[in-house]
Length: 278
Image 1 (cartoon, one colour):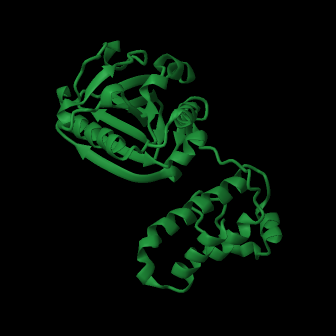
Image 2 (image 1 turned 135 degrees about the horizontal axis):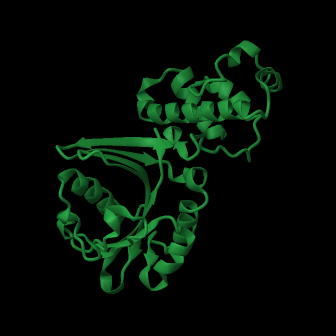
Image 3 (image 1 turned 60 degrees about the vertical axis):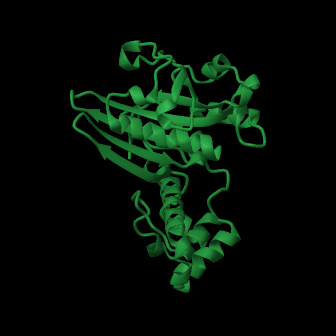
């Protein structure tokens, strides 16, 4: 843990200065993630709890509970443990039942919505965790998009080749959405990728987001496309939808802005079907 973060943590938790309350949620998240990283280091057999405690200069009892995924250390304890765990130790999501992955420790926010037709849960994920959550495909998309992006954070359309991006993530749908219209109702899928089989592999090129049959679907898409366009910020999320007809869908979605020609604005939308646990 960097010294600057360590001192911030100490200021909040050790000195109890509630006036810096704006940092408190972020520090709690850091402690949760740090505790989970320490838990996995032990659970994966890199070191035993007694040995970790000894190398960190801590009493064995201080690490009681580290075998559980909800291990929550103090700032001082985490700082000591981080001095032992190698910096290059990579934390990967836990695979459950083969394909199901646990992304709960990378969630930065949640949005729930429901209607008579469906229930939707959207988890905003830490973009820096793309490599750990889906290093084989989504991470490659992210690196390629960032490499091509200009100073405004967007990929110039003249340098964008959708087929190249598709080759990086063959199991994902690579859509391009025109979001030039200031009204979200005018957002339209310029290119629709039907290769993942969603909606019986219909080609929905030219489909407007506002054509969706449910307001939950529209609102879920509107807010993220608009934020990506206006702020030039990529977006990484895990989305789960349960429909009234009994069908369920889970997928990872990565959004990245594109600077279209002649002043148009577009969004690269990558959706990869993936079962996950939050």
